[in-house]
Image 1 (spheres, rainbow, N blue to C red):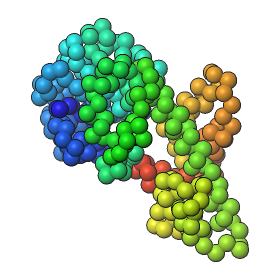
Image 2 (cartoon, rainbow, N blue to C red):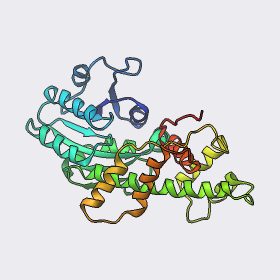
Image 3 (tube, rainbow, N blue to C red):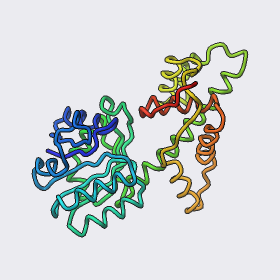
Image 4 (cartoon, rainbow, N blue to C red):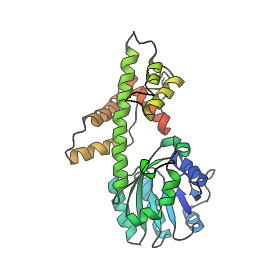
Amino acid sequence: MHIGLVGLGKMGGNMRTRLRNNGITVTGYSHDPKVSDVASLPELVAALPSPKIIWVMVPHGEPTSQVISSLEPLLTSGDLIIDGGNSRFSEDIKHAEQLSIAGIEYLDCGVSGGVWGAENGYGLMVGGAAQVVERAMPIFDALRPEGERSDSFVHVGDVGAGHYAKMVHNGIEYGMMQAFAEGYELLAKKDIIKDVTGTFAAWQRGTVVRSWLLDLLVRALKEDPGLSSIKGYVDDSGEGRWTIEEAIANAVPMPAITASLFARFASRQDDSPAMKAVAALRNQFGGHAVHKAE
């Protein structure tokens, strides 16, 4: 199988590597000529066999909409666009309707795995028609970890469902990170606690809170035991807000996730030790930038 990949940043570049390592031919396009395989989107489309499959991996919102609108006149009926970024589910519905006029197929794919995905594989949540998902399955199988498909891949439902599931995933992630961060601050505050890093490390096996996020927090603390190099300022990239908006729209109580988002807002006012831990975790699993301490 031969596909196009638009966007070769932290996630897209690693995905190109994993796809190629697992037998998928990839022609990638980026604004950065140092990493791009072709010089333009028309060259990318021309390099692909028909029917064409193009995976879009650029920031959500206007950048994604611009890429899809630029690809539309270059493609023909039966071609397929997969949006693997973090688009809002409502944008997927709009994009699918836009492309359907020309007979172009569309899938949305929520992707989790961060900067570690090239090595470990990605968790995938897909929305769209079943026959189109099946057509793209070799791509999904190349990206996900080895083992049972159902452990790391799900066809969630119709267009928009994949990104909706990823939105909720990220909302849960907010709450989990906040809980670890608050535990870190309390342990660091108590004078009888002499080994904060060792305490978290001892939870990595045999406890009910063991997880990859815990492993990454231990990694961050070993690299910088007091997190002194990081300012306690935490950004939010949209999915947490959207999760809470959907909770309100559907009358679903989400006090933990809502509080975790508000804690990020608070981090922009005070240099909080707990927010340093959240910032460190985001850097560890996703390569997200941190604000350096003065």
